[in-house]
Image (cartoon, rainbow, N blue to C red; front, side):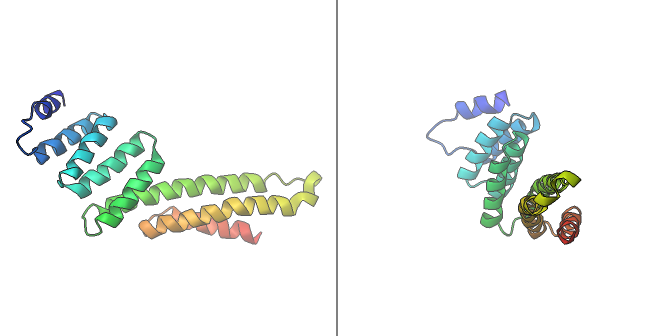
Length: 170
């Protein structure tokens, strides 16, 4: 990585930057988990119109690795819109599906926890408890739908939806 960066720093400004070298610098940074530099160089690669779809995907993955899932989501959604014919679109969609399922599962768990607060002593509060849980379960259902929109084969989204349906009936 240091050698790639030294070459970029020494690049003659009168010459066009070697886009492949910038992309490879990003890949090198990604391989050693230097996500900040990977983001920087993948963004430059995109600016140079070099492997923009792949760079977008790996930018999303760098954000994910950094715990910046909102930025990952935004990047991948943008990539899906910008590069609808990319062979990397399925990877972008799968990552989004996984992201949405994780959120849906968390909300489902919250809804179940809320429903489990019902005890003999608070039966009069049951309608309020159900309404509070319904909010969480509705959000979970919407996220499971989003997961299936982007990743139709996501094996976890349908069971979440089924569980929500069962809970809403009871």
